[in-house]
Image 1 (cartoon, one colour):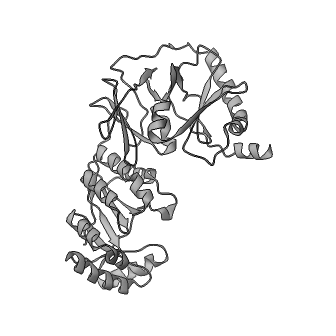
Image 2: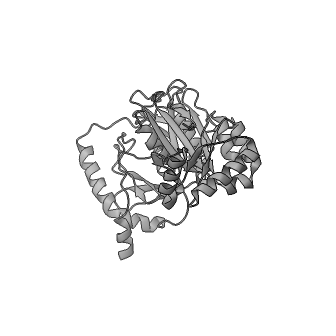
Length: 375
C-alpha cells in the first residue's frame, strides 16, 4: 500500500480550460486519465451511445492536433499517421484517403471524437474504471509498464475526492448546461489555442521566422521522402564513416537540394580532410561546413575558426542526446523564435517518427524552412 500512495505523489496534473459536458444533470462524473496522469474535471468524456473525448486530450500520448479554419477540419497526427475529421460533412479519413464510419460530436463549444475509433487508429488502449465514490475514470494508455487500472484508481483516489468535491460545490451554484449533443453537419468548434493556433482558430503566420533544420548522421530513405513530401530543405552533417557507408544516399541528399557538412569527432582535422575527400568522390561537391557535439564541440569550433571554415552551432538540441526525441521540443523552439532558430536533430528512428508532425506544424504555420549555407 505504501508503494501505491508513493506513486500517487508523482501523478502529473494537466489542467485545460474547456467546458465540462454532460455531467451537470447527475452527481456521477467521469475523469479522463492519460497513462498515469489524471486530467482535471474541466476535461471530461461525453457518452452518447459510446464514449467520446475532447480531441485535444491525445497530446499527452504524442498525438498532436491542428484545426484548419478554411476547411473546418481537425487533424490528429503522429509521425506519418494522419487522421482528419471534416466537420462540415461529418466524414473521417486518413492520409491515404481511406474513409471511416465515425463522426464527431459538438457540445458546449467543444468537439469530441470517439475514443474507441481514435485508439484503434493509433494503436492505443483504453478502459473504463468504475470508481469508489468520487467518480469513474476513462483511461487511455499507450502501452504497458504502468499501474494496473485497480492500482491507479486507488492511487488517484485522494486527488479524485478533492476535485470531485470542488466540482460538486461549483455545480450547486451553476446553471445546468444542456445535455443534448449537437450532431448537426456544420458544428463550429472553438479549440483551445496551441502553439500553432491563435485565438481566431487560424494557423499563426510565422513567415518572418526562418527555421534552420540540421541533422547529424545518415538519414533513412523514409526521412528523405518525408522532407521531399513537404518540400523542405535541410542540412546534413555526415562523418567520414557515414559517407563511405552509403554514397548513394549522399548523392540523393545533394540532389534533393540539401546542404552537406562534415561531422567531426575529437580528430577534427582528420575527420574534415577525410570527409571532404569522400564527399567529393561520392557527389562531386566540396564543403567548408563542419560541426560537432559533446566534448569535441569546443575543439571543433576552434579548428573551424583557425581553418577558415563555417562552424554550425544550434539554438535548440532536439536530438536523443538531450533526452527522448520529441516533436514538442522542435515546436516549442520554433514557436518562441522571433527571427530565426537553428534546431539540431539526429538521424534516428525517433526523429523519423516525429519528422512528419514537425514539418506539418512548420508548414501549417508558414515558417520559412532553409538549409544552412556556408558563409
